[in-house]
Image 1: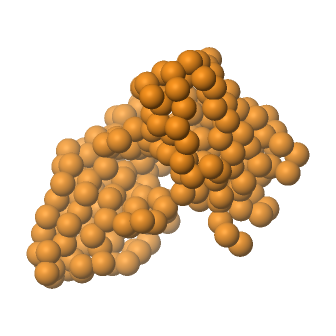
Image 2: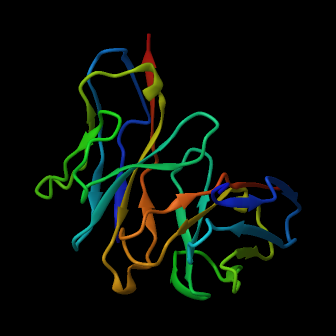
Length: 112
Length: 115
């Protein structure tokens, strides 16, 4: 069974400090990993996916298959980064219609 | 485009009743997925529909069912409601089915409370 673990329920850092939100996964095949973000009073939206290898809003995430991790990083946190962050995995079952498996989420608070 | 829309926004039902939740995907999107999000948890996959056919099902009992209409809108039905069904129900649409090939766009959700 596939599983996504986000060990931190809450992460509080000061503005300008580096941010790292941890994500570990369990999956026997070749997964695709995503980070979703939900800002206050907004809907869940895609932040980035590992296959695109791009930086969005200063965030990056590298898939480490050896450590089965997909940590989200940003060198300098901004107040507008405060939000709920979910790591998600898509498996490779036939047809690809297995949906996304989400972690429980990390609430990131950026203090001024 | 207003994005994915869901109705109703909030709903209160009694144990044993049934409920129907509705979702309209983004124009041009042919795939709809349903997720249940219990307070304090991440969304959990219930169903995916593409071209009016069920393409995937999560680990939910048969009390949960869904369908997709020719205009690609979708309904999620839950029978014999239990207190544990209280949750935020999210709908997501994408261009097509298949792993991460197509980004999923989420709606605002329907908050279901079962008393």
